[in-house]
Image 1 (cartoon, rainbow, N blue to C red):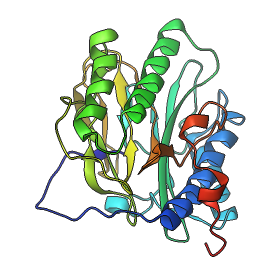
Image 2 (cartoon, helix red, strand yellow):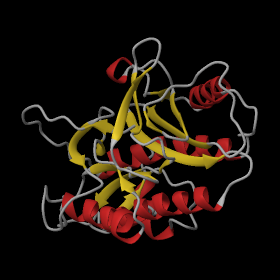
Image 3 (tube, rainbow, N blue to C red):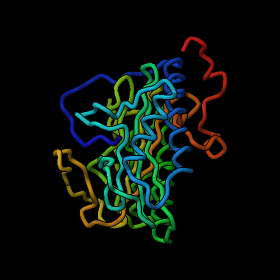
Image 4 (spheres, rainbow, N blue to C red):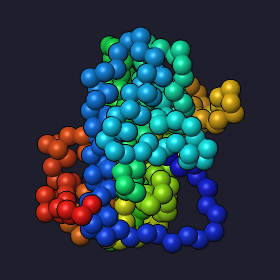
Length: 284
């Protein structure tokens, strides 16, 4: 769940122990299981409220809590944003998925106090070359950011790799008003993790940090428009109403490089996974 850009005073950054990182990886495996389940369930005509209930039930069945509920007063297990909706839109009873819809599902999981956060983009029914290219750019942007999440690098190195790919190489909009963040013990922690920036600037990455990287990519402008649900909940669309895609992982900064804690594809993510020994804490 992306954090809106706001900074109020100074707060400490929590460095996680190997045991805590293993616990967050277990939380992340539950979250990844949600996305794996959705991939086989989403279809034209599906009500977005059915996605909400399916996800909430899955998380509960795995002895965990949907921790997006309660963040800044949010009521739901999922954020469900469609087409030009960039982030923070809600599941809506009666809103049916249509052919060619570009759906983003964002959720957080709390397993025994260990948090994880991940968003993924899905095309409903038939895709188009334009949608495929947008999704590719957004997915590649995430992994270019992850590659920079090394001990000793800086937050700006992550953002610069993402921004250069999205804007310089692909001429799309790299959203700036919503950002990644630290995570654990609460959903939104420091540091702020922008998907834009200058190399060699910003906070230095340290072993034990756990962060989210979550580029949001618009086909047109990077700027956002603020919208409101009937109950007053605030969400965001692209300012020019072009399509938007997002991918997000939770990852740990370790001496052996970045480690993805919300991987859905162990083969694709092989270089970024914790080893079985690093996950072996029997007292979790």
